[in-house]
Image (cartoon, rainbow, N blue to C red; front, side, top):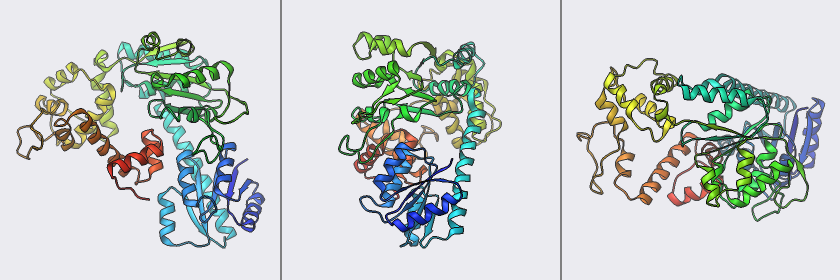
Length: 464
């Protein structure tokens, strides 16, 4: 049954709205404030929320930000008796589906409710369709190395055995994990990804296992962890080599017992997940150095899959490049033979991710005709170091393909270059996500609180 949550501090509104929706055979939950509403969200699989703006303890728009950050696929309809254009615009920017004014119209409530649920269903179907279309086909290549990876994926997918995917950064480990999930018997269940390197050590246990309200200073409501969210599905622990020893110990316990307790909680929660893990580190060496638990390594490494670096599958380079260009709308591209030799001989330290970036650069910078060797060198090479403070002009002999970020970065020391890149990267990602902090944090895989801190650090502008 479709579950709808009403968060409003007026008992009359809650009762009236609940009655309307229950008459349509929806299962309705009600909360008198946002904190209680967040508790319900942590316990129930809610499909739609009606959220008042003026609430005690936590305002509706603040609650909307938290909901969009923790449950990004959930549709939220804002309701208010003090509506104005600015508030409506802000609510929509924060991710609200619609904005209703009090007193509520029966017909309008039911229409918006149906539209929101229909939109949610369409998005889920679209995501499923994309996953089905991409699936294993997204692992592009005809090389022997990739053929072996595909064979391993097909053999391993049908079981529930744990799999450890290894390979260099950018080689496509996440694609392997998604392909395994899509070919498994759990493919209609959640695929939940955790980037262990992107979560602060102090928060990793809360993120994995969840927490109870009051477990620590910022725990204002109950929170489901990734193990719970992945229940009956697949949990992908990316960059597991960066997980702390304390967290490793608790993950091992959950794997062994198939049970967990939230941080600050006493209730035992059953968990049924298939675990896929990935790392760019040599975990056997990490075990020898005391940085990774050997017993956890053996638990994870039931089926090892190695994703080869691009330099070891050079016959796939041109195929991948044309694939990425086609996805960008470039249907045909001729490459000079000498330029092809450069592509094959290049080391590709960033692997497939770097090749994809090259395709994007070609799409933006290339004006037509055959791609020649000197043009390709401009696209691939590192900018030579120049005296600090100097900038290349439009007539510079360094060529038109060097962008300002590259010019800046190679003139700075390591710390300065890293900070400049991070600032430009965050500016771009914020712009791509309409300045919404929760959406940006989800897109780049960090906590909203971390993103807030970086925005303050660099003085970045956001839409609030």
